[in-house]
Length: 271
Image (cartoon, one colour):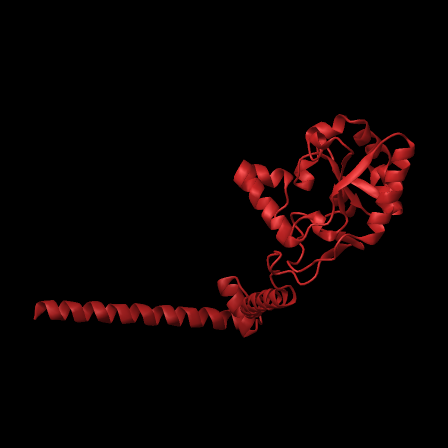
């Protein structure tokens, strides 16, 4: 019983203290209002060091910040969706997925990045053949005998050739000097492998570079529309080792520009 009486007394004291605090607060507020002619907002600011308007402004700012964050997230999601819609992922380029050959700045391209369709079969290009015949005649007049021992190759022919090289040298080595089917420049009908007549031992061989015919071609082929397609020191760009016998027909004007630039076709076209 005594314990219950003590608890009641403590609760009574607590309520008395709370009532006194409220009375003092109310009195202080009224005093501020009367003494300084403050408005209720000013009285609160005087007692707590913050204005009601400032408190409301902070709340509004916080609400605007949250709204702006939500809008930014929404805009970012919309931009992502629009980007995915506008720029769908490009399918991998393979001979099987290509419908048309690739032209860059009007130039037909066949390399390790840009394959030809499997059914692309134009045959040997007549303009390139006529240009080669003119070049062969000019070389003959200069005392050199040229022969184009390999020009157009079909997709199926390149398949057999490449597979044979893989069997003989392994795929990694074969990829350095032979194009996979669909990636060969010979399939365009514009690629010409050229050697010296009656010197078959040098055909498609590194030893060809030391022949007089190879030196003449390197200096004069561009005048007839051909460029040395895979020059020395450019394997990291073309994907193929130096081939002193492989020439690509571009036409006299473009071949001369590429020759004078000292660049590979990839570098010249920026691909």
